[in-house]
Image (cartoon, rainbow, N blue to C red; front, side, top):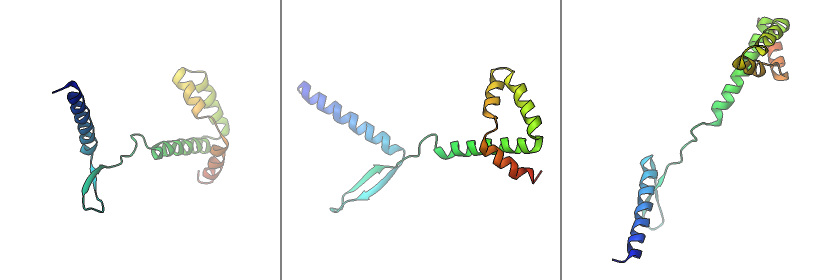
Length: 114
């Protein structure tokens, strides 16, 4: 056999291996007009979906609003000042927990409950 035949064989083998690996995660069978059934890999969701990020952001906003409504604006600001003069993780927490307009609106609504 010639070297070209081996290269074609290697290329075909790599393609078959790649297709097999993709189909190992699940397949969807489809039939074309001639009756040939082919397997196509299932589309997978991303590893880190956007929905989780949105839930985390919403949870953080609700936590900030609940703390602001329960503690009051003065005590909340004092706590933020203490955090901002602390270590690096405390300073990052102070930046995240800074009051924003959405937090103020949510806290005003929650203040009626507390």
